[in-house]
View 1: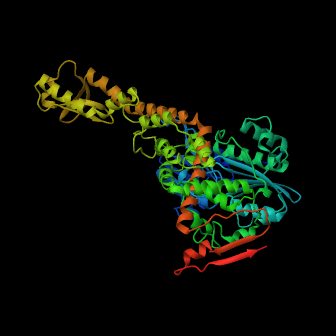
View 2: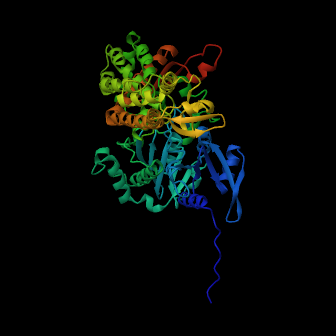
View 3: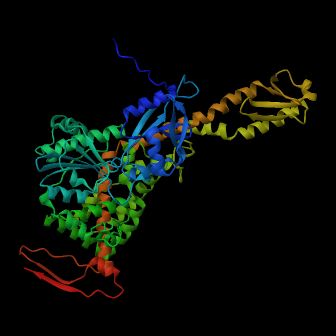
Length: 607
């Protein structure tokens, strides 16, 4: 005898759509777009209500049970999303992609992006002066491959480590916002204190597929040119990381085009405990005050501040590289060349992250305005760098270059102070596109046209009370009082009858109505197309622009060191081939800043 069939609960078509989408994203909070709100349902609603302190309500019933629901306004979603992501949560943003006017049943919806702590690129969600890293770890016994990626800048790096202590030290240096590990990763206790731990299927760390994913991303046949071909564990980690990043961003990540190998032996080795106690850029309470970076950071740009923190957290052992930097700082100090360089770098801003948003096609109008300002500042910056007598600075200046064509395009295309989003228009400058200007004129000059029609029709009909108006239901009309309606000319076509008046339309008014009512939507569509064209023009030069951003960040750090050397009376150390450590009149850089009285210098000799 067959088992009795259990009747499945019945859901409305909209809830069926939601449940299908939620089934595809079981580990994310699904933000389901409904009109001007993002709605969350069931357990997602309960969790969001608790985390965001928003009202938990219900939306009727589905399957015979009340549906828990919580919602946030679309226009203020960024603040709520940022709070959830900082707490280590991941979100699936589900937008309406169908037209409600033509949809039969629920409007078509689609998850357009997944927001996770380690895959942020939106300025509103990021700390501007710190890297935001996604990391992946793959282990074999007590050897580890680790990959890290900052989607907001495109920086992609790998390394291999031996031993749990080395892994702890590296994680303390990187402080990833999100960490990917295999479901069978045996060292979970080492990750205590980190949020955003994501366990992945072991097959996602398979080496052959990882190698294929990485080489496809970097558009190379093998990884020999990056010095990574022999890093089997790191390749496994990097492949899983790249696949995860692609899935969350729903794009090919064109700004990730290089892979850096970080060798442990190239830098001073600091274990996790030493890093914490040294308070390089994070104090023992988790803040940033009273740290080495707090003293040393007077950088002009956020990308320079991030580069400085990378340098401080990974002090190099290569003496020649350090000497090149010292010579560059000395050259910037001569004649105080660092001062105009610092001031001009302020105009450049954080183009590193802006370029990443351009690559991801998520750049906003104000990003392009900042790029325009940066490109316009480059010629003057090049002039300021010319007197600096440093081969290293000359090399950086050459890499920076100038972009007059892009500067001209952005100056002509984008208004001085654009709105936050392109959606509502008002971004593309007048005179940039004739078709857009014509569409805007039709829409914006409707009022004057109607006044002209009203004046002309009053004269033609002799009806002084004739009015020309508009309402959303019936469109444009000519209104005549009922007592005078029999004086309407023969080309007047009755449109609406009111209690005390008649409303008419004329062929001329109907023609204008058709143009005016479509002009605004056509103008917005045209403007969005032009905006995308401008983005594409910038994206076409992404590779040299990213190199320029890196060079600018390094120039910022070097000029910052020159300023700090002047303000704090620092002296460059001398390197010798003899073993030993000799410091005369040393001062603790942090403690000195906290004292109300002069710091008493100390000598230290270690040989």
